[in-house]
Length: 35
Image (cartoon, rainbow, N blue to C red):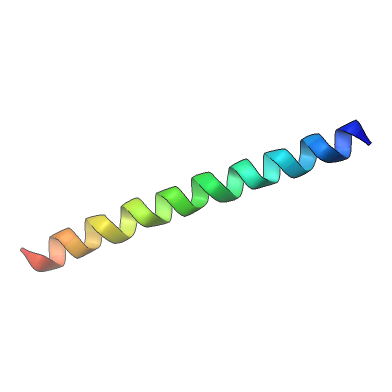
């Protein structure tokens, strides 16, 4: 049970960091295309 919870937490963390990376990428490209 504990392992499952840990696994879910890890997955959420991964998703969050993935979202953040995508966000940064999008801002970066938006910045490039504007200039």
